[in-house]
Image (tube, rainbow, N blue to C red; front, side, top):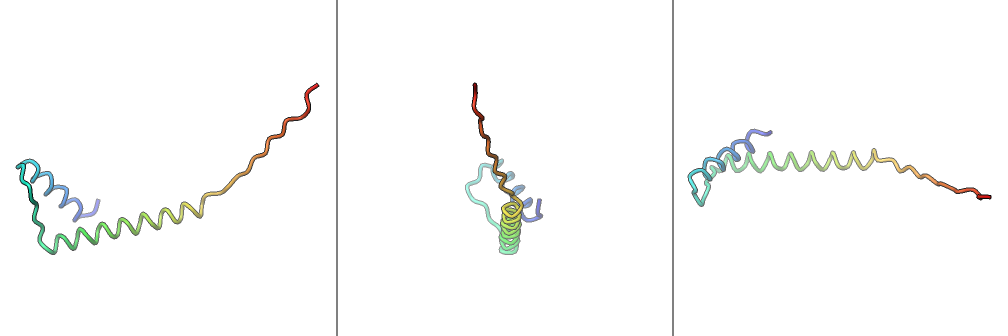
Length: 68
């Protein structure tokens, strides 16, 4: 897991434990979180494009002969 995402999850867990309603992030942490999420989304997009290329269509035709 990426560093800023882990920090955010830890901060959320601590905040939920205190039952606080707000969470405050310094701008540097918010930028880092944004960058980590952007990288994850870009990686996911690349993986899905690769998967689409790798998928091969196999066509199978089954014919039943005549029964006597």
